[in-house]
Image (tube, rainbow, N blue to C red; front, side):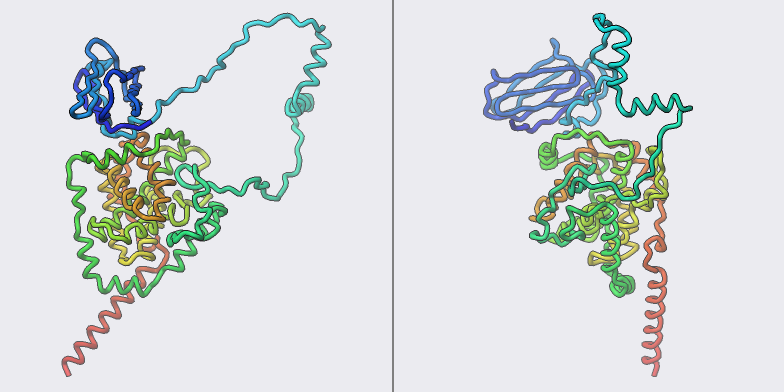
Length: 465
């Protein structure tokens, strides 16, 4: 079945769905309404929309087909007149499956049973024989002042029964890098071990690669001769000037082709997704700023190189194990949470791309804050642009499959505008210092300034002779 193009509008009383399905017979249309769910089937098209609130199919509802334009217009009455239906322009959210609550109580309740033909002593013997080892231990512990039997724990690590390693969005993917050695994937930092590395090994390899790529001379040269970098710092992103984000036809088509998925992350996973989102937006902001929103053939490499979750399959959080709370954290983020997520992005922006400037990294952080401050729609637009860049690369498109596509769906269907705006406010005033980077940047800059001053003094002395 083909998912047709569509868009939704609303008044105080009705919701109007315009569906593009050319060259069909209107008599074949099947429309069904079930509370918040609208399904439309007309061969070869099928559309299922899950509205935020209930709609009715009553006397005010209608469906008309215009053969000249190819549009089927379905008008449905709101169950509560005057109720606002939010996010009707977030197509991925409308196309997400309806969440079904799993009943917490058993579906069958035993209210009686036939009398057993066995005597009570015989039934007792049968019950004792049928109890499990765990139940036997509980019975024995009850007879012995609740002293449970204990054994010495084995010191060896648990046996790994599978060599599969999972990565990507919510660790849902595996097998995408099986033949990575035969692909020209220049950003892959795990080599042929991409499918077998444990998470702690990925992090170790990432840190080792960052140390290897760090070049003091390159950084000092860009710090001293920064005329072009100053021009990039003065650039303002035109996409952030718009007061309202209205999706284009091309963006709507891209959203229609996103995967139809419903995500059920834990509270901790949901929290980590916001941190990973920051690294994606940082890489996008760096490429937009350094190309002045005119992507080059190197843009896909730049974006993937700056995101640890892509190049090393190593997403945030980057807190050490002793700092990870045992209980589920609250939705709010501390400055330490946000800084620890962005420090690797800062480091990579100083070690990998052409322009290496701490001031540039700070400008990108401010860009991320500005994007988040515009809300989910602007974030979605930036993610769609990243997807467009990677989709046109013969190797790096794989990172859309395991990361970006899912983020485009999640940000529309599940992310919280309140949390996003709170993070934007924190990022705007967040202080990431040069000492956090770990490469003695302040000393290098001081040394570069001393050398520049000495060179200028020598030149003045020569000219005065």
